Length: 400
Image (tube, rainbow, N blue to C red; front, side, top):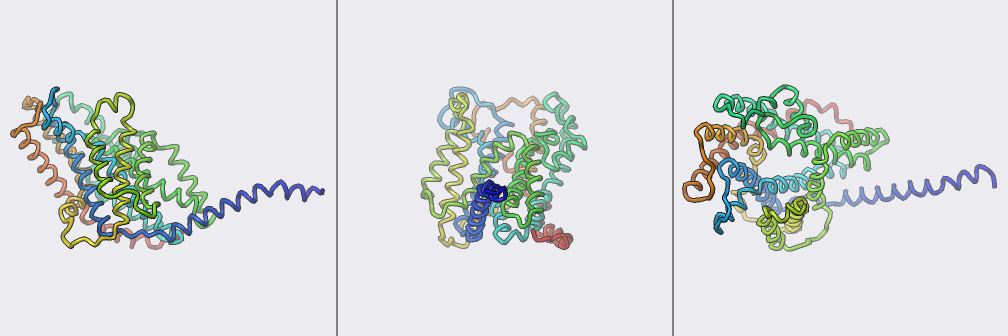
């Protein structure tokens, strides 16, 4: 046997492997191209409800931390209040699942159209983020100046150390909790770093597999590899939660009835603050279970083609439209309220009664009104900003 023949035989397994991978990619691309990316009225209403619920849990959690320090031996009503006041982390997980479902849809839709529109995807994501984030950082800085004037106690000494330009720029590009702290007093900014990286990493992953041309795939691979090296373990861990929303697009049938999925979610939320779970290291497992319940809800509603009435879900739709603004804007003014209470020697409530409930509801309404006001000034104009940016960068559409 000649040397050329032996060389061809040695290369045959490599060629066969490459052919098999190409076939798999081609099959996946065909399946993605045949996916139904439409959102039914039932699903749209459910997504609004989930986003509204998640933002509510986050804000209520922060109000609870500001006003309450529950004592032991709570009665049934106060035990329920304790559970409700500390579900903020679960609320963020709900937002992650919904984000994975919707943003993953946008990225896959671009790939399904032979990669056309990836520039538009980037513009959509960046304008969606920054139309609120930039004003939130600036307004948060101004709020922190008021905070320092109201109260200069040691409880807020960290704020001054977190308000320099480097930290501002780090939060602007999603490096908080990795290389810089969250900017000023606005602690909820931690989760935005996760979102920014997921928005970048998932489409680059798709381009590595489905990108047209070797150059596009290599550039995407470099970006994806650099991202994986840069991000923290927290971003990667919660990426599992984000991907659960993404995977909601895969099943072609309903996995569970809606009532079962909602019941499981309620059970997970009701048991979220169980010290037994956290003391034995099951906290993250419980968080994943909560996210799975949200994914089941989305899956069940995705395959429900029921046409809802025109006014059904109007309340959840109203609150859903400014959840992002509420999330980013509400914390700095809440810290000012906390500073005022500390200055006046306020003692945290040990239980929930009529007076305490009125205080909590009043503060909650104030924060919602504050968030909506800034939504009206910033986020409400997102579509106009997006179209403006699209028009300016139209020549950059290279047809990925």
